[in-house]
Length: 222
Figure 1 (cartoon, rainbow, N blue to C red):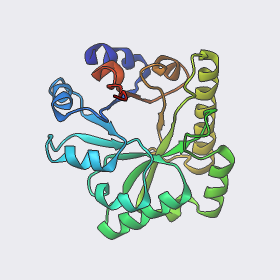
Figure 2 (cartoon, rainbow, N blue to C red):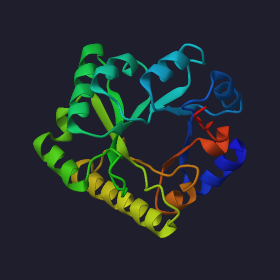
Figure 3 (spheres, rainbow, N blue to C red):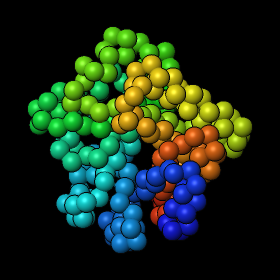
Figure 4 (tube, one colour):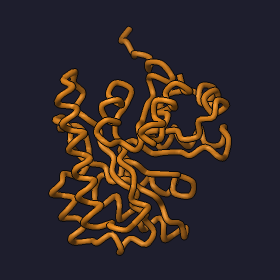
């Protein structure tokens, strides 16, 4: 499936993050051996348990809600924090980057879904944040783009609308704050069930787990 998916991405010049959360290191190693290098995890503890058991050249992406007190554990090696979803977290990433003298790449997580349980900046919150704290104040954070998750729904028109809005916000933020900055280039959106729509709406990076690893096991009460 990996080869077929990568071929599908070629016309869009988009990249693939294999969402490996809850998956054993053996399953990740299989995809690694097939050539996949970018993997996404959503829990710091699980990520830390996998890092030392897998090849060093894996590009680890943090895609889950991140607590500020956990940044220090992943700051030295994380390839990209996709879930920079609030000002406090970004300031904490900056502080940790200063401590270890590393520029830490992040994506700005946007809240574009109908579900209140999802995290991220609204368009207004993001504008307010950068008006108070312009990007150039963060010399140990590299803003590389935006990330968003669509509503969990079978309504494809709603999903398309949310992805289109994500791309529009990306374009606005790029023009307003990162014009001429080649590092700000990623629009991460689309998962196993909706990545095709995301690609059509301008995704440069998709996050796919189920198609590559199979469904996560259901936990049933005894």
